[in-house]
Length: 243
Image (cartoon, rainbow, N blue to C red; front, side, top):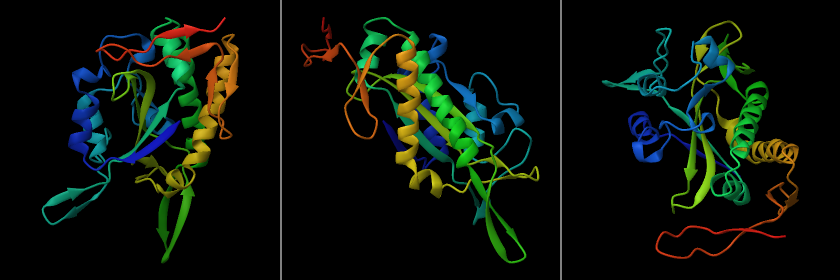
């Protein structure tokens, strides 16, 4: 499943994604660590682990190369931070990964998210260029994203999901840096969700699992896994393998 939300406040977003209790930057496996993604990020020298100071600065439009995107309104600098694209894996995958102990599924999910973002980068990331009184929408093929894996839902159930923070930053074909023209991301979000589920389904099957479609939009579950009702004060799921 894919859900999208605008990031209204750079300061609040920076604090939220780096809260200790969210586990985002804790000492976990490689599949659980926050990292940069995208060709635009590489051009800015953003590779490997995400650090809070750089993350917060880019949300505000302050790039590592010294360029500042945005404009001054009164005494305040204004820059739209970006979009949170949250990719949520099927419940059966989460149960097998966190309770069943198959961490390969987390890597499969991360790989599916990256493959989806690569498609988004090539086909949907664009900017507006004004010239001679006309405005053109130009594809840039330049994405800057920070990936924050998380392992629990808001109700403390096992739920593998990745927050892909697509920064409002892209490199134009002429080498200049500009803001992203975001409407295509919102308009075609259902398509992006289908692409993600397709990549993930393939990855899961390549690990030897069988899957079953549960919805016409490509949502699926792994065969042989059933989440029983929550029990006890902790509200944890029981993993049942159907023989």
